[in-house]
Image (cartoon, rainbow over all chains, first blue to last red; front, side):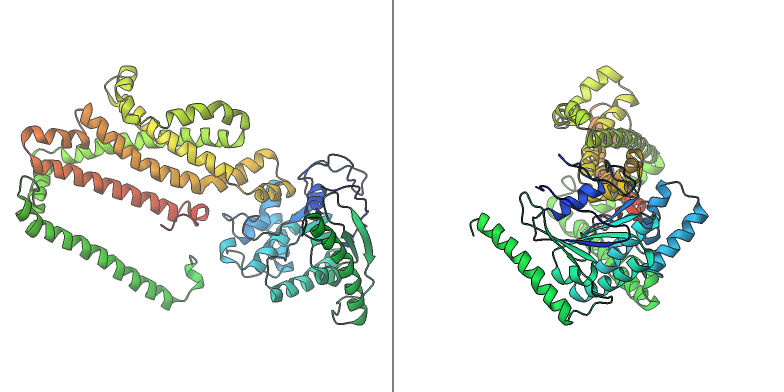
Length: 241
Length: 272
């Protein structure tokens, strides 16, 4: 699926993987998370250690609503999960959980179950759940793709804020160009699959919060869009359409 | 939907009223049926063919106060069902979890399961009597057999239905394989176990009555089967109605457990 993908993400960077659907960007994220192992090549962490399995140093936020949270646990218990697995003592756990719930703005909803939450709130729980284990990297697989446009905008803004406050490395997968340019420091555009690779990496030097109507934003948007369009056309012609 | 606290007292009162209204409809429906039976159905079909509710009530009183067997027969049958059901469920859950988690165990066990689960327990009655004697053991074993497969298959299905993302989420949150099993696999399978046990309860009643009819000297099945010897047709109906009542109560209790102890696990399936 992927072929000769090479890139380095800096510590504390907001890095975006952008590409048409089916280009393998989610697969790439799963490789980094350690859910699947590469048939060839390696993924190396900053410590020089090779990724071989999932670990709490790389937290994952999934796209789908309703399937990745634990429905039998309420908000606080979901956020607490990783700490419980690590046998963190109860009083320490409580402090961390409360802080993480506050960070994502879910104070007052601690006792609700996932089925009682809106899509945006569920994704907030996912983010808090990952933050609680204090990972070095947050991997996000189109976490806002299933949300409505308004909620998505708010979540994007808050995520950038969170990234600034936490100083953690964010690797964010999306197919939404506006989302990519709106949030990332660098945007890696992937080619169409199969055998996809990184086509070009854009440095986004625009200051936060980013104005989507600014001239720089728009011209960047057009360039990236053209890049992606080429890939989509390639993919369609390959499929005989 | 469930969080009563998040809703106002007014809405609660409203729901209570609505609930009472529907309960009243249920009670009226039963009452109307009993009256129809007493004053229309029995006169039309004759008392031998269909004894009236009043005669059945009299029969129940006879069995309860004069013969003093109704209560003990109910307890005997219930005891057999519950013992077998609980043991069968425990075995079913354990084997189901093993099958669901291991391709090797699944491959080894599958042929047996899919072969044996199609054999109605009652077909094994005679064999079990040879193996386990004519006493309680053979009947309890029969119920274990009937319960075990239902719960086992449901449990294994539940394990198979766990979303990969839940496992992945737990793994990247630092859970070991053993922790994934206890903190994700088992809780995520509870709804399936719950439903499986509920279905198994029904088949347990089915099996015990048949077993008691054919080979027992106590229990409700025995009562129903032997009433014909004494031409006590109304006793037969007492047994049948007791059966329905016991099953109803058992099912209600199980639902109550689903709505309290297991609520957080079965909130999606516990509503029917």
